[in-house]
Length: 437
Ligand code: UD1
Ligand code: CA
Image (tube, rainbow, N blue to C red; front, side):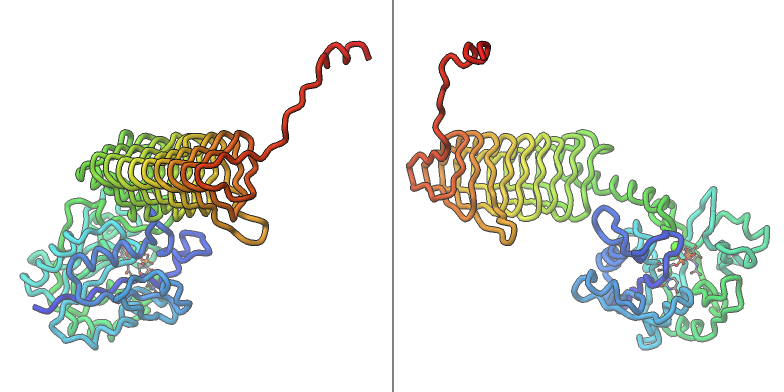
């Protein structure tokens, strides 16, 4: 059987989010909502993935290579959105997998199970369903004989469902497998004769001979996001899933509840993440590292690195093996050499620091002259003393030193001591003179 085509619906306005940003672009653990479904479909083995977006093409920049964008010109409903993906162009026997772009927790495994059930049963459509104690605004599944589905009744707006139908606890999860041929025929016959005046995808089941439910027993996989309270609920579950994957792979997360880890983060074995840490935006951490109460955004840590407490590592910060970024240290776009330590109160920006170096407390790079950023180069085995300001562009050679309180504006040659500060004068008997005057 040919690989299924996945269609991800993501052109709705998402008015219930009350946001300038399209709903499906709101991030969940650092990944735009819609990409969760896209990734699950890809991992489940979809041959093509088509995302249906709005005419502003706002989704285009975030779609991974190989994922197609189809444009729905007006948000006329989920049925119209599927039409925009032109399922009639597929071989009629192909399975078309349809995923709501606002149902992000669906897994590749659950999608594979749906496709397998669909292909085994020979139904024209298979609809993922879940049982909810509080079925809320989900579409209700009306079952007919032999466990088939006769219709799906919408409930978001009054007028579509009867009181009896509203009491049904089995709901449409928004994830479907259709045979392409019957789907195209059913889509052609949809009408807007309903409470919202939309073309409901769910009405497509009315035109099909055999529609089967596929009940998932874990409804947390199929929660939809309609407003920001749903966003928070789903983010919590997504975060739990990310934590679990890292812990099972050998990472200690001391207190998951106070630890934020984006979906794009990689962490090596035997690394320990202490409470109140944020790991964001593609941060990569090696093995045997320790991160204490810190915020890492697009940073790279090789093995054995220690960070924090209270460090802020920004994009392009690279800490090589056994390096250290200590307390109240900010590092961005800088390469910190093997075993090099930046222990206290420093800002290191746009710098290349060699191995075995120690930057004394309050070593600061003055990397920005108000117009341009400049680089600072610090060699191997350098010792800067406390309160060294390095005015870039400037370099400090291997084995060099700086004096405490120095403002280094000229290169320090290898092995030299750079001191750049006013000499001290002591005014003798100052206190006595003051008392007399
Ligand atoms: C939909 C289902 C409902 C189901 C629920 C599951 C319909 C008519 N109803 O309701 O039965 O229980 O999902 O979460 O399908 N979209 C478009 N174009 C449009 C309208 C929507 O691309 O014109 C996209 C949205 O971006 C969203 C998805 O389709 O990702 C679902 O739309 P939404 O309006 O949230 O549908 P629900 O009311 O949640
Ligand atoms: Ca929805």
